[in-house]
Image (cartoon, rainbow, N blue to C red):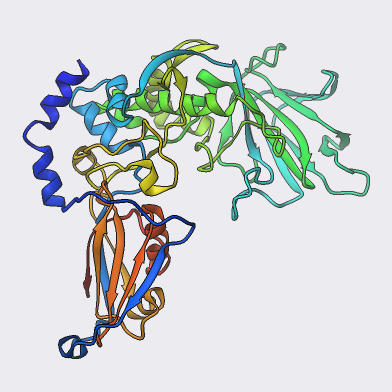
Length: 457
Protein backbone atom coordinates (compact mmCIF):
# COMPACT_ATOMS: atom_id res chain seq x y z
CA UNK A 1 0.00 0.00 0.00
CA UNK A 2 2.80 2.39 0.87
CA UNK A 3 4.54 1.91 -2.49
CA UNK A 4 1.28 2.40 -4.38
CA UNK A 5 0.35 5.77 -2.89
CA UNK A 6 3.96 7.00 -3.01
CA UNK A 7 4.22 6.29 -6.75
CA UNK A 8 0.89 8.00 -7.35
CA UNK A 9 1.91 11.15 -5.48
CA UNK A 10 5.40 11.50 -6.87
CA UNK A 11 5.14 10.17 -10.44
CA UNK A 12 5.96 12.80 -13.04
CA UNK A 13 6.38 15.62 -10.52
CA UNK A 14 9.42 15.07 -8.33
CA UNK A 15 12.23 15.74 -10.78
CA UNK A 16 10.52 18.85 -12.15
CA UNK A 17 10.05 20.28 -8.67
CA UNK A 18 13.67 19.65 -7.75
CA UNK A 19 15.06 21.27 -10.89
CA UNK A 20 12.76 24.25 -10.51
CA UNK A 21 13.95 24.73 -6.93
CA UNK A 22 17.59 24.59 -8.00
CA UNK A 23 18.44 21.71 -5.71
CA UNK A 24 21.88 20.16 -6.21
CA UNK A 25 23.76 17.46 -4.36
CA UNK A 26 26.25 18.53 -1.71
CA UNK A 27 29.62 16.79 -1.47
CA UNK A 28 30.66 16.65 2.15
CA UNK A 29 31.23 19.42 4.67
CA UNK A 30 33.80 21.03 6.86
CA UNK A 31 33.74 19.68 10.40
CA UNK A 32 33.64 21.77 13.57
CA UNK A 33 31.34 23.99 15.55
CA UNK A 34 31.67 27.03 13.29
CA UNK A 35 31.55 27.50 9.51
CA UNK A 36 34.78 27.74 7.53
CA UNK A 37 35.72 31.21 6.26
CA UNK A 38 38.13 32.24 3.53
CA UNK A 39 38.89 35.34 1.46
CA UNK A 40 40.29 35.76 -2.06
CA UNK A 41 41.36 39.00 -3.71
CA UNK A 42 40.57 39.21 -7.44
CA UNK A 43 40.54 42.94 -8.41
CA UNK A 44 38.21 43.89 -11.24
CA UNK A 45 37.36 47.26 -12.80
CA UNK A 46 33.72 46.15 -13.19
CA UNK A 47 33.31 45.24 -9.55
CA UNK A 48 35.17 48.38 -8.49
CA UNK A 49 32.41 50.41 -10.13
CA UNK A 50 29.57 48.35 -8.70
CA UNK A 51 27.02 50.12 -6.55
CA UNK A 52 26.99 49.37 -2.83
CA UNK A 53 23.46 48.36 -1.78
CA UNK A 54 22.02 49.50 1.52
CA UNK A 55 20.76 45.99 2.25
CA UNK A 56 20.12 42.52 0.82
CA UNK A 57 16.85 40.61 0.57
CA UNK A 58 17.12 36.91 1.50
CA UNK A 59 14.36 34.74 0.03
CA UNK A 60 13.75 31.18 1.15
CA UNK A 61 11.36 28.46 2.15
CA UNK A 62 10.74 26.12 5.07
CA UNK A 63 11.04 26.38 8.83
CA UNK A 64 13.34 24.24 10.98
CA UNK A 65 16.44 22.08 10.76
CA UNK A 66 15.23 19.77 7.98
CA UNK A 67 15.98 16.36 9.52
CA UNK A 68 13.19 13.78 9.65
CA UNK A 69 9.49 14.58 9.33
CA UNK A 70 8.28 18.01 8.20
CA UNK A 71 4.93 18.45 9.92
CA UNK A 72 3.30 20.40 7.09
CA UNK A 73 4.54 17.76 4.67
CA UNK A 74 2.95 15.07 6.85
CA UNK A 75 -0.30 17.07 6.85
CA UNK A 76 -0.42 17.26 3.06
CA UNK A 77 0.49 13.57 2.65
CA UNK A 78 -2.37 12.72 5.00
CA UNK A 79 -4.74 14.93 3.00
CA UNK A 80 -3.76 12.89 -0.07
CA UNK A 81 -4.64 9.59 1.57
CA UNK A 82 -1.56 8.50 3.53
CA UNK A 83 -2.17 7.04 6.98
CA UNK A 84 0.08 7.60 9.99
CA UNK A 85 2.32 4.62 9.25
CA UNK A 86 2.66 5.69 5.60
CA UNK A 87 3.81 9.13 6.67
CA UNK A 88 6.46 7.77 9.03
CA UNK A 89 7.80 5.25 6.56
CA UNK A 90 8.06 7.93 3.89
CA UNK A 91 10.03 10.46 5.92
CA UNK A 92 12.14 8.00 7.96
CA UNK A 93 13.95 5.81 5.44
CA UNK A 94 13.87 2.10 6.29
CA UNK A 95 12.02 2.65 9.57
CA UNK A 96 9.17 0.44 10.79
CA UNK A 97 6.02 1.13 12.79
CA UNK A 98 5.95 -1.48 15.56
CA UNK A 99 3.91 -2.29 18.62
CA UNK A 100 6.26 -1.61 21.54
CA UNK A 101 6.36 -2.42 25.23
CA UNK A 102 6.69 0.83 27.16
CA UNK A 103 7.06 1.94 30.77
CA UNK A 104 3.74 2.97 32.28
CA UNK A 105 4.90 6.42 33.42
CA UNK A 106 7.21 9.23 32.42
CA UNK A 107 8.49 12.14 34.51
CA UNK A 108 8.50 15.63 32.96
CA UNK A 109 10.21 18.66 34.48
CA UNK A 110 7.82 21.63 34.53
CA UNK A 111 9.96 24.02 36.58
CA UNK A 112 13.61 23.87 37.60
CA UNK A 113 17.21 24.35 36.48
CA UNK A 114 18.25 23.24 33.02
CA UNK A 115 19.52 19.63 33.14
CA UNK A 116 21.19 19.77 29.70
CA UNK A 117 23.57 22.74 30.08
CA UNK A 118 21.77 24.67 27.32
CA UNK A 119 22.31 28.42 27.66
CA UNK A 120 19.13 30.46 28.01
CA UNK A 121 16.93 27.62 29.27
CA UNK A 122 15.82 26.56 32.71
CA UNK A 123 14.48 28.51 35.68
CA UNK A 124 16.65 30.48 38.09
CA UNK A 125 14.33 31.81 40.81
CA UNK A 126 14.44 30.15 44.23
CA UNK A 127 10.67 30.51 44.55
CA UNK A 128 7.61 29.58 42.51
CA UNK A 129 3.91 29.14 43.25
CA UNK A 130 1.67 26.16 42.55
CA UNK A 131 -2.10 26.68 42.31
CA UNK A 132 -4.79 23.99 42.66
CA UNK A 133 -8.29 24.91 41.48
CA UNK A 134 -11.64 23.15 41.19
CA UNK A 135 -11.05 20.20 43.48
CA UNK A 136 -9.29 18.77 46.52
CA UNK A 137 -5.63 18.02 47.18
CA UNK A 138 -3.17 16.47 49.58
CA UNK A 139 0.55 16.95 50.24
CA UNK A 140 2.52 13.79 51.01
CA UNK A 141 6.04 12.77 51.98
CA UNK A 142 8.17 10.36 50.00
CA UNK A 143 7.02 7.60 52.37
CA UNK A 144 3.37 8.31 51.56
CA UNK A 145 2.38 10.10 54.77
CA UNK A 146 -0.13 12.94 54.26
CA UNK A 147 1.09 16.13 55.96
CA UNK A 148 -1.59 18.50 54.63
CA UNK A 149 -4.84 18.36 52.67
CA UNK A 150 -7.65 20.62 51.61
CA UNK A 151 -10.05 21.70 48.85
CA UNK A 152 -11.02 24.77 46.90
CA UNK A 153 -8.61 27.18 45.27
CA UNK A 154 -5.27 26.85 47.04
CA UNK A 155 -1.86 28.45 46.54
CA UNK A 156 1.36 26.70 47.53
CA UNK A 157 4.59 28.65 47.92
CA UNK A 158 7.44 26.38 46.82
CA UNK A 159 10.94 27.60 47.64
CA UNK A 160 14.49 26.64 48.50
CA UNK A 161 15.24 29.95 50.22
CA UNK A 162 16.16 30.05 53.91
CA UNK A 163 19.07 29.05 56.07
CA UNK A 164 17.46 25.80 57.17
CA UNK A 165 16.60 24.53 53.68
CA UNK A 166 20.05 23.02 52.99
CA UNK A 167 19.15 20.94 49.96
CA UNK A 168 15.50 20.55 50.89
CA UNK A 169 12.35 21.89 49.28
CA UNK A 170 10.04 24.05 51.39
CA UNK A 171 6.28 24.25 50.81
CA UNK A 172 4.08 26.77 52.59
CA UNK A 173 0.29 26.28 52.40
CA UNK A 174 -2.58 27.44 54.60
CA UNK A 175 -0.11 29.16 56.94
CA UNK A 176 1.93 25.99 57.56
CA UNK A 177 5.47 25.23 56.43
CA UNK A 178 6.67 21.78 55.34
CA UNK A 179 10.32 21.06 54.62
CA UNK A 180 11.56 17.75 53.20
CA UNK A 181 14.00 16.24 50.73
CA UNK A 182 10.93 15.37 48.64
CA UNK A 183 7.23 16.19 48.76
CA UNK A 184 4.43 15.10 46.44
CA UNK A 185 1.25 16.95 45.55
CA UNK A 186 -1.82 14.89 44.56
CA UNK A 187 -5.17 16.28 43.41
CA UNK A 188 -8.67 14.94 42.80
CA UNK A 189 -9.54 13.31 39.50
CA UNK A 190 -6.17 11.61 39.00
CA UNK A 191 -5.14 8.00 39.45
CA UNK A 192 -2.95 9.06 42.40
CA UNK A 193 -5.96 10.38 44.33
CA UNK A 194 -8.38 7.84 45.77
CA UNK A 195 -10.67 10.10 47.79
CA UNK A 196 -12.97 11.13 44.94
CA UNK A 197 -14.13 14.64 44.22
CA UNK A 198 -14.30 16.83 41.12
CA UNK A 199 -11.40 17.01 38.68
CA UNK A 200 -8.89 19.61 39.84
CA UNK A 201 -6.44 21.59 37.70
CA UNK A 202 -2.92 22.67 38.61
CA UNK A 203 -0.81 25.51 37.29
CA UNK A 204 2.71 26.58 38.18
CA UNK A 205 4.16 30.07 37.88
CA UNK A 206 6.83 29.94 35.17
CA UNK A 207 5.69 26.71 33.51
CA UNK A 208 4.31 26.27 29.98
CA UNK A 209 0.78 25.04 30.69
CA UNK A 210 -1.81 23.77 33.15
CA UNK A 211 -2.08 20.19 34.33
CA UNK A 212 -4.98 17.81 34.78
CA UNK A 213 -3.17 14.45 35.10
CA UNK A 214 -0.49 12.87 37.24
CA UNK A 215 1.12 14.18 40.40
CA UNK A 216 3.85 16.73 41.19
CA UNK A 217 7.13 15.63 42.74
CA UNK A 218 8.84 18.57 44.47
CA UNK A 219 12.58 18.54 45.20
CA UNK A 220 15.54 20.94 45.21
CA UNK A 221 18.20 21.19 42.50
CA UNK A 222 20.93 23.86 42.42
CA UNK A 223 19.05 25.87 45.10
CA UNK A 224 16.02 26.06 42.77
CA UNK A 225 12.65 24.30 43.21
CA UNK A 226 12.46 21.30 40.88
CA UNK A 227 8.86 20.49 39.94
CA UNK A 228 8.25 17.25 38.01
CA UNK A 229 4.98 15.84 36.65
CA UNK A 230 4.72 12.03 36.89
CA UNK A 231 2.08 10.78 34.44
CA UNK A 232 1.19 7.98 32.02
CA UNK A 233 3.48 7.93 29.00
CA UNK A 234 1.23 6.48 26.29
CA UNK A 235 -1.79 8.68 26.94
CA UNK A 236 -1.56 11.45 29.55
CA UNK A 237 1.85 12.71 28.41
CA UNK A 238 0.99 12.56 24.71
CA UNK A 239 -2.41 14.21 25.29
CA UNK A 240 -0.49 17.29 26.45
CA UNK A 241 2.07 17.53 23.64
CA UNK A 242 1.57 20.77 21.71
CA UNK A 243 3.65 19.85 18.67
CA UNK A 244 1.04 19.81 15.86
CA UNK A 245 -2.26 21.68 15.32
CA UNK A 246 -5.11 19.46 16.52
CA UNK A 247 -7.46 21.08 13.99
CA UNK A 248 -5.63 19.32 11.15
CA UNK A 249 -7.52 16.19 12.10
CA UNK A 250 -10.76 17.85 10.99
CA UNK A 251 -9.29 18.75 7.58
CA UNK A 252 -7.88 15.47 6.31
CA UNK A 253 -4.88 15.41 8.64
CA UNK A 254 -5.76 12.52 10.95
CA UNK A 255 -2.86 10.50 9.54
CA UNK A 256 -0.44 13.32 10.33
CA UNK A 257 -1.69 13.50 13.92
CA UNK A 258 -1.19 9.76 14.38
CA UNK A 259 2.28 9.97 12.84
CA UNK A 260 3.12 12.78 15.27
CA UNK A 261 1.87 10.74 18.23
CA UNK A 262 3.96 7.69 17.26
CA UNK A 263 7.11 9.74 16.59
CA UNK A 264 6.74 11.62 19.88
CA UNK A 265 6.15 8.39 21.81
CA UNK A 266 9.30 6.83 20.34
CA UNK A 267 11.35 9.85 21.41
CA UNK A 268 9.92 9.75 24.93
CA UNK A 269 10.41 5.99 25.17
CA UNK A 270 14.13 6.40 24.53
CA UNK A 271 14.36 9.07 27.20
CA UNK A 272 12.79 6.79 29.81
CA UNK A 273 15.75 4.43 29.55
CA UNK A 274 17.72 6.63 31.96
CA UNK A 275 16.51 9.10 34.59
CA UNK A 276 18.45 12.37 34.51
CA UNK A 277 19.72 13.05 38.04
CA UNK A 278 20.09 16.77 37.31
CA UNK A 279 16.29 17.09 37.27
CA UNK A 280 15.16 13.70 38.61
CA UNK A 281 13.21 13.48 35.36
CA UNK A 282 13.16 11.87 31.92
CA UNK A 283 12.17 14.92 29.86
CA UNK A 284 11.74 18.67 30.08
CA UNK A 285 8.62 20.42 28.85
CA UNK A 286 9.93 22.52 25.96
CA UNK A 287 11.88 22.35 22.70
CA UNK A 288 14.92 20.85 24.39
CA UNK A 289 12.78 17.70 24.30
CA UNK A 290 9.11 18.07 23.30
CA UNK A 291 6.68 20.91 23.97
CA UNK A 292 4.37 19.74 26.76
CA UNK A 293 1.51 22.05 27.84
CA UNK A 294 -0.73 19.48 29.51
CA UNK A 295 -4.39 20.43 29.82
CA UNK A 296 -3.94 23.49 27.58
CA UNK A 297 -3.40 21.14 24.65
CA UNK A 298 -5.84 18.43 25.73
CA UNK A 299 -8.64 20.96 26.19
CA UNK A 300 -7.81 23.04 23.11
CA UNK A 301 -10.67 24.81 21.30
CA UNK A 302 -14.17 25.76 22.41
CA UNK A 303 -15.42 23.04 24.73
CA UNK A 304 -12.22 21.09 24.09
CA UNK A 305 -13.26 20.42 20.48
CA UNK A 306 -9.77 20.38 18.99
CA UNK A 307 -8.20 18.70 21.98
CA UNK A 308 -10.64 15.82 21.56
CA UNK A 309 -9.44 15.36 17.97
CA UNK A 310 -5.81 15.12 19.11
CA UNK A 311 -6.70 12.71 21.94
CA UNK A 312 -8.57 10.49 19.49
CA UNK A 313 -5.49 10.36 17.24
CA UNK A 314 -3.30 9.40 20.21
CA UNK A 315 -5.78 6.74 21.32
CA UNK A 316 -5.71 5.13 17.87
CA UNK A 317 -2.04 4.30 18.50
CA UNK A 318 -2.47 2.82 22.02
CA UNK A 319 -3.19 -0.73 23.20
CA UNK A 320 -2.67 -0.23 26.92
CA UNK A 321 -0.62 1.74 29.44
CA UNK A 322 2.39 -0.43 28.57
CA UNK A 323 1.83 -1.23 24.88
CA UNK A 324 1.53 1.17 21.94
CA UNK A 325 2.72 1.88 18.41
CA UNK A 326 6.04 3.63 17.84
CA UNK A 327 8.77 4.18 15.26
CA UNK A 328 11.68 1.74 15.11
CA UNK A 329 14.77 1.00 13.06
CA UNK A 330 16.19 -2.53 13.13
CA UNK A 331 13.53 -3.30 15.73
CA UNK A 332 14.64 -0.63 18.21
CA UNK A 333 12.83 2.64 19.04
CA UNK A 334 14.41 5.73 17.56
CA UNK A 335 14.76 9.42 18.35
CA UNK A 336 12.59 10.68 15.52
CA UNK A 337 13.41 14.32 14.74
CA UNK A 338 10.71 16.52 13.25
CA UNK A 339 10.15 20.18 12.41
CA UNK A 340 7.64 22.50 10.75
CA UNK A 341 8.29 22.37 6.99
CA UNK A 342 10.99 21.83 4.38
CA UNK A 343 11.91 23.86 1.35
CA UNK A 344 11.30 21.01 -1.08
CA UNK A 345 13.51 18.19 0.16
CA UNK A 346 14.42 16.89 3.62
CA UNK A 347 18.03 16.64 4.80
CA UNK A 348 20.55 13.91 5.45
CA UNK A 349 21.28 14.16 9.18
CA UNK A 350 25.03 14.63 8.73
CA UNK A 351 24.49 17.64 6.44
CA UNK A 352 22.73 19.49 9.25
CA UNK A 353 24.52 18.20 12.36
CA UNK A 354 27.34 15.64 12.59
CA UNK A 355 26.24 12.01 12.79
CA UNK A 356 24.97 9.81 9.98
CA UNK A 357 21.56 8.51 11.10
CA UNK A 358 20.47 5.69 8.77
CA UNK A 359 16.74 6.38 8.99
CA UNK A 360 17.10 10.16 8.56
CA UNK A 361 17.92 10.31 4.85
CA UNK A 362 17.06 13.04 2.37
CA UNK A 363 13.74 12.49 0.55
CA UNK A 364 11.74 14.65 -1.85
CA UNK A 365 9.14 16.81 -0.10
CA UNK A 366 6.98 18.79 -2.50
CA UNK A 367 4.18 18.51 0.07
CA UNK A 368 5.30 21.06 2.69
CA UNK A 369 5.12 23.95 0.24
CA UNK A 370 1.54 23.26 -0.84
CA UNK A 371 0.06 22.29 2.55
CA UNK A 372 -2.79 24.60 3.63
CA UNK A 373 -1.83 27.25 6.13
CA UNK A 374 1.96 26.99 5.75
CA UNK A 375 3.08 30.59 6.16
CA UNK A 376 6.69 29.52 5.67
CA UNK A 377 6.18 28.09 2.17
CA UNK A 378 8.08 31.24 1.18
CA UNK A 379 9.59 33.99 3.29
CA UNK A 380 12.00 36.91 3.11
CA UNK A 381 14.48 38.42 5.55
CA UNK A 382 16.77 41.44 5.35
CA UNK A 383 20.46 41.82 6.07
CA UNK A 384 21.80 45.38 6.09
CA UNK A 385 25.04 46.48 4.47
CA UNK A 386 26.66 46.88 7.88
CA UNK A 387 25.50 43.40 8.96
CA UNK A 388 26.75 41.81 5.73
CA UNK A 389 30.12 43.54 5.99
CA UNK A 390 30.46 42.35 9.57
CA UNK A 391 29.47 38.76 8.70
CA UNK A 392 31.91 38.44 5.80
CA UNK A 393 34.63 40.68 7.27
CA UNK A 394 34.73 42.93 4.20
CA UNK A 395 34.76 46.77 4.06
CA UNK A 396 31.63 46.70 1.88
CA UNK A 397 29.61 43.97 0.17
CA UNK A 398 28.11 44.36 -3.31
CA UNK A 399 26.81 40.81 -3.80
CA UNK A 400 26.12 37.61 -1.86
CA UNK A 401 25.54 34.26 -3.56
CA UNK A 402 24.80 30.69 -2.51
CA UNK A 403 27.45 28.81 -4.48
CA UNK A 404 26.93 25.26 -3.19
CA UNK A 405 24.13 23.37 -1.50
CA UNK A 406 23.56 20.21 0.46
CA UNK A 407 21.50 17.37 -0.99
CA UNK A 408 18.39 18.91 0.57
CA UNK A 409 18.96 22.21 -1.24
CA UNK A 410 19.94 23.91 2.01
CA UNK A 411 22.76 26.42 1.71
CA UNK A 412 26.27 25.07 2.20
CA UNK A 413 28.51 27.89 0.91
CA UNK A 414 27.95 31.64 0.83
CA UNK A 415 30.27 33.91 -1.16
CA UNK A 416 30.31 37.69 -0.74
CA UNK A 417 32.13 40.08 -3.09
CA UNK A 418 33.24 43.65 -2.46
CA UNK A 419 33.76 46.51 -4.95
CA UNK A 420 37.35 45.51 -5.69
CA UNK A 421 36.49 41.89 -6.46
CA UNK A 422 37.67 40.51 -3.13
CA UNK A 423 35.55 37.55 -2.09
CA UNK A 424 34.85 36.12 1.33
CA UNK A 425 33.47 32.61 1.70
CA UNK A 426 31.55 30.93 4.53
CA UNK A 427 31.02 27.16 4.38
CA UNK A 428 29.30 25.01 6.97
CA UNK A 429 26.60 22.58 7.96
CA UNK A 430 23.06 23.64 7.10
CA UNK A 431 22.22 24.58 10.69
CA UNK A 432 25.47 26.52 11.03
CA UNK A 433 24.67 28.59 7.95
CA UNK A 434 21.17 29.19 9.27
CA UNK A 435 22.55 30.35 12.62
CA UNK A 436 25.39 32.63 11.48
CA UNK A 437 23.44 34.28 8.67
CA UNK A 438 20.27 34.55 10.73
CA UNK A 439 22.07 36.24 13.62
CA UNK A 440 23.10 39.08 11.27
CA UNK A 441 19.63 39.71 9.82
CA UNK A 442 17.40 42.53 11.04
CA UNK A 443 15.03 39.88 12.46
CA UNK A 444 17.88 38.24 14.36
CA UNK A 445 17.16 34.76 12.99
CA UNK A 446 16.46 32.80 9.81
CA UNK A 447 13.52 30.36 9.53
CA UNK A 448 15.61 27.77 7.67
CA UNK A 449 18.61 27.41 5.38
CA UNK A 450 16.62 26.62 2.22
CA UNK A 451 17.73 29.93 0.71
CA UNK A 452 16.56 30.51 -2.86
CA UNK A 453 18.24 33.87 -3.48
CA UNK A 454 20.09 36.78 -1.87
CA UNK A 455 19.67 40.01 -3.85
CA UNK A 456 20.41 43.72 -3.27
CA UNK A 457 17.39 45.64 -2.04
